[in-house]
Length: 121
Image (cartoon, rainbow, N blue to C red; front, side, top):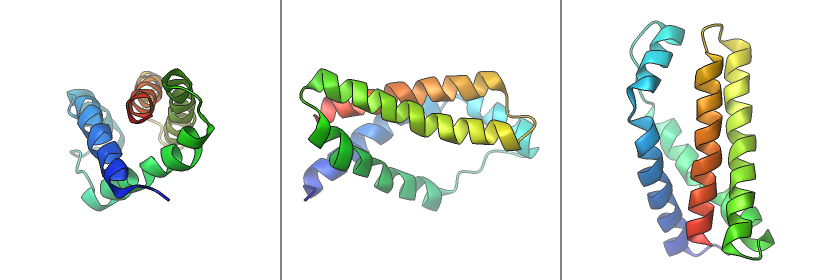
């Protein structure tokens, strides 16, 4: 059973750290290249992502980890896999989705899920 306080804490930490990445102009520029219009965030989809993301930690990373460092490694692996799936799929279907943007987002996902998993463990 997931403790609601820990669940909410995970979301708050993840959103706070992720905001550093999401607030960069890099996203606006890259999305404009792809969509040919301004970035408009879908808050429902974003909210659903942040509600689902902690489930990885509570059902896989936390129970399978033996230390904070182990949680960090498992979180980084999960971040790498999740963000690689997203970014490489985008690169496959959107002609103007750049390799540089894809790789930087994969690196960010690897880091952010690792850090949050480390903190939460």
